[in-house]
Structures are given as C-alpha cells and as structure tokens.
Image (cartoon, rainbow, N blue to C red; front, side, top):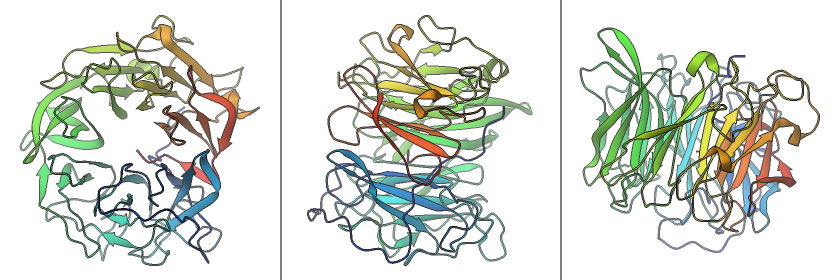
Amino acid sequence: MRRSTAAALTVTLVATGLTPLFLAAPASAAVAKHYDDFNGDGYRDLAYRHFYSGISGADGWKGGAVNIVYGSASGLDTTRTQVVHQDSPGIPGTGEDDDQFGESISSADLNKDGYADLVVGNPMEKVGNAAYRGTVTIVWGSRSGLSGGTSVAPKSGAGSYFGRALATGDFNGDGSPDLALIGGEETWLYRGGFTKAGGTGSVSKIDKAGQGWYSTGLAAGKVNGDGRTDLVVLGTQFVDNKPAHRIWYLKGASSGLTSGASKTYASEPWSAAIGDFDKNGYGDIAVGLPDNNDGKGIVSVWRGTSSGPSGSMTYNQASSGVSGTPEAGDNFGYSVSAGDTNGDGYADLAVGVPQEDVAGKEDQGGVTVFRGGSDGLTGSRSTWIPQTVLGPADSYVSFGSPVRLRDLDRDGKADLTVGANGDALLMRGTSTTPTATGSVHLPEYGGGFLN
C-alpha cells in the first residue's frame, strides 16, 4: 500500500474565545531550554497537524491547522490544547481550500525570549498570482502559549513550494537558533536572530551548484561533537541524466554550514534522525529507506565521528532479533526518530513499519524500537509494538506512519508518540521499553509530528 503524502501533523484548539490557560513562570531573556516549550513552563509541548487539515474546520477555518497539546509534570495534558491556523488572530495570510498550513512544522526559540516558537510551512499557499508559491510562518511563544505570527520572506531565487521541509538548530554556534528550509529545489539557511518585525540574520542558499541536486527533506542534530548543529539534506542528484538517491551532510561552522560527505542509496531516503546510539560523543545518522527492495524497507545508520559520518550499518526485519519478516510493501523505515527511551544515556531509535500486516489485518502497521548500547543499535535489543496497542481495528490503519521520541514528562525517558490513520497514541518511556499502559490518545490528530 502506498504511503500517505502527508508529511507532518499538528494539534489544534477550538480557535474561538481562547483564554490564557497556560500560566507559566516568566521566562528570562535566555534561549528556552527546550526548543518545543512554547509557554516556558519547563515542559515540552507537542504539535501536529489537525484532523481537518486541507479541509474546513468545525469553526469555519480553511486550509489546514496545527494542534498543540501542552506538557505538564504528568506528561501531555489533553485538556490544554490550542489550534493555530491562518484565520487565528495575528497569523499572516488567509486560510484557503487548497492550502496546507502545517504540512511541515519545526520549532526553536528564534527570538531568544525564553519561549519556544513554532515554525509552520504552508507549501501550497498561493501568493499573489503565483500558485503553490508557499509560505513559512513563525508563531511566537509566550507565557500564555502561542500567539501572533510573522512571515519568513523568501529570498530571491527561492522556487515554489517554499517551506515544504523545515529544520532548526544553532548551525554557526553563536547562541542564536537558525532556520533551514526547502524552497524550490534548494535548501536555504536563515541565520538568527529573528524578530517579530520580520528581521533575520543573513540568508544563504545551500546547493550543489551545477551538479543537478534536488533537496527533498531535512534533519538536524550534532554529529561531529564540536557543539554546533549539523544538517543532513535528503535529496536526489542527477548524474549523467540518471537519478541518484542521496543524503548530504553539512557541518555546522562559524560561517553557517560547510559541505561534507554524501551517501548514495539504492532507493529514496524518506526520513532521517540523528542520535548518539553508542554514546561515544558523536551523533549517528539513521536514514529510513522504506522503498528499498520492493518496499520491504531498511534503515541505514551512518556512524558519527569527529570528522563527520563514516561507515554504516543496515537494519531490517531480517536482522537477528528483529520481529517480523521482510515482505514487499511493509515499508520498514517509513519514519524514524531518536531519543533515550529507558534513561540509560544511549539514544534509541523508533522505526515505523506502517504497512505491516498484523493479526491477519492488512497494513495495520507497527513500530520497532531499537535500544542503543556500547555497540550501537542491535536487533537483540529491539522491541516490536504492533497496532493492536491502540485496540481492535480493521485493515489499513498504518500505525507507525509517523513516530516521535521526546521526553514529555521530564522523567529522563523519551516517550513514544505514534500516528495512524485518524488516531495517535503517546506511550510513556520506562526502564525497559515504551509502554501502552497509561497511554494517551491525541485529540483531533491529522498526521505528522513536530520534528
């Protein structure tokens, strides 16, 4: 079964008559500790695409929306939610039927006021007479949650579908978060700081000039141990008029980003995540390749070193200790996310397998969680979490189409959030593996998660 084209999901609140529900302590002028703590209370929040994205919402908004569920000491509080869309007060633009506000989402404290800000891509937005020009909006964090927004101006030369992928990080190490995004065929780096009036630092194009490079996705993290954020660009490069599927490593540097090694794959890379799976101080790059081998799928891990990524390991459902059997169309590696689920200091990897048949039901899906260790990831430390943790269901649920690992209750263990068609489940991290006991269903889930 072919995958959904939806790339990201967002959470929404009932948009009318919002009150300041989230009374966090005042934040200092320092950058927010967590890049996804929108109200500065010390707990991570979760954003995803609203259920009605792409169609009209219940209160009349159009063109997509993002849902935010705010965090607390007990994890996500589903009674404290917010919906953000282009008809929300202070958000630039107007929601239209063909828009996809929330198709991509990221976050960081871009104006360094102590509150994380939400970055929302709307790659289908019509701007003037230009169809599918695309827009990117920064929705500003505050003590009472997200409020008001500012457009990110496309640089001259940025093509259509502006903002179809986003990533944030301090790429030049100056203490101000930066924003990377895809517009047209290239990636664009916007350096911080950012202001509510629309100001940014310098902007540069990231491209393999004259080499037929087409950017399709982004992932950010720390690979070489120098403290700066590095960027991985997923894409296709045409060599002798033939497409080569590649990822491209760019090293964070005082100037922004410098070009590093590329790695070529037999199939298109669909997802990537960076985590230190062997705790050697260098981030490893996990790449999901769900189309590999007739859709059986694999995950390739490009190991981090002081000079950047070097050497790799491959994992699939034929790896020793991994549950299941590789079958055409399973799409192992459709989504990947890294985080320490059991608090042992090693990053773990969640791998979505949304088209796996479960309990006789076609394409129900599931997630394989690989636990890290001194030898990196291994199938002997993997756990299979099938769709059935959601409860009885029919075929085509596609559990695992997006996955996300983040510590949402501040207990030192990353919680696993898994999306399916029309539902999503948050499972708390434990000393062994994420558990469905006490799990939380996300309200009005429409797809994707904040990266």
